[in-house]
Length: 430
Image (cartoon, rainbow, N blue to C red; front, side):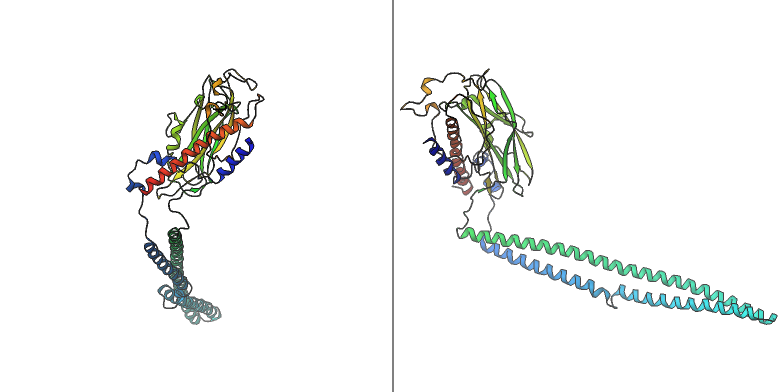
């Protein structure tokens, strides 16, 4: 019967609302409504936004295509200024090169005439011709150098035009891609609004976010009465987008080894952060934001568990989860309440020490079947939890403390459901 009750509670918890989504707004709703809520655009406004985005994207596509065509064709037209200048420079360079070749040949011919002269008169005439040919060759060489320089400068100017056009295309392509993203976002917003209008997606519904994780590290397997244990709760945003406000949650519960007596009053859980180093009661943690958390970022919350010196031997658990609330009203959270178990030992005791005897009035009776701890029918999700502790070896039924702890967690779930309702009522002005 015990196994059946526990299994039923766990199965029911699977379909329970998201845990504590989110307790924080119920406590931290201090901002004026105008600052926390934004007027939603109408369907018609969203359609107009899609039309504008489509026109911007179409214009961006045309601009890219025109720029590419100009790069491939327009810049190479003979009438384009830098192309025309390059053509003229190429012609001038070719003409200068030809003139230099002719002048160099004239020098060679004049030298041959001088070598062939036999009389003084012929030698004097040939020398004059050679001197003139040399002067002409020097001038032709200088002209060729100037023409080559002009051609290089014209080529550089034309290449610069091509580079500038390529850069322009790159900017236009980026603008096109941004316009495409804007169009998709506008279409998505319109589709979501139309679905919400048709009732396919409830407005203001918090969603499960398993990528927002809350993990405990450093919690020992055993805690002893009269001691204090310090450990860490790390909240990690794996959702892929920034969460505007993140609210971690932690709570400690315990029962004696027989599952009769609740030990919560012996366990004092406190928290602090680097930004808020003062130790505070963990009962307030669920209503306190640790601020914005970027995608793939983590924040550590320090936890301190103080164990009363008069505690009985038993089994305890620290339950953790995390939720978020964005400025646009969207919300969600880790869909489970994970538990980290530990063994509770009395002061000076060990695993075999049954601890102090329970008060007889706390034991089960026909009129009080659960003892002082009480029961709850609220389901608790124990699937996917992490239990790091172990039960005290006293010969008692190991299932009893776990069921008792599950009942304690169920109370947390019940409180969370109330807080969710309060949050939604506030967000809708109810």
